[in-house]
Length: 237
Image (cartoon, rainbow, N blue to C red; front, side, top):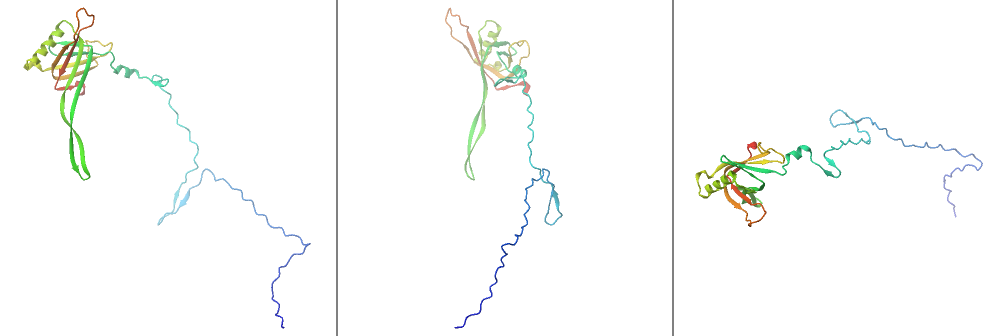
């Protein structure tokens, strides 16, 4: 039997046992560096044009808080707020009311209310997406003023009753130009007052005297209901 020739397999050269070991080069230790706060501008290439130097924003730092203005002494009081002296003077407290016409003048201690109303009219129409609703201003109701006071003897009661009698008889002079003046606490009633309303074509539609008993100590109250075509503020015209 013929033996095959030996294969030429390269053998590894082993270093001798007593040979010195080779020293491997040590890798440098990479220590991370923090980027500086002021980063220089980076050049950003733009398509079809020169490079633009766009500055980059520095790292965000803590910004100081805005200064808070000190509280106003007359506005803060604990957890509650108080009005300024100017606002207090503009508020009517303990007001009295004066009704005046060419024929006479009468002072009242209570204003029952001033009512001015405009009726609304609803309208429905068909739109591209269904029914559409809207509201419009309709007929204006005449303003109504209710005044109350203690009944007195004298010309102030007489001219009110005479005025009401003219309205009951539908006389031409039943419509009169009247003024309703508001006075505040401590105001001089002979002055112009705090606020004045002009009643256009006013007439007393109702005069009521409260019922009392003989020998009673309560005050007899007189209530007057005025109707007018319009209620205006002369200062707002």
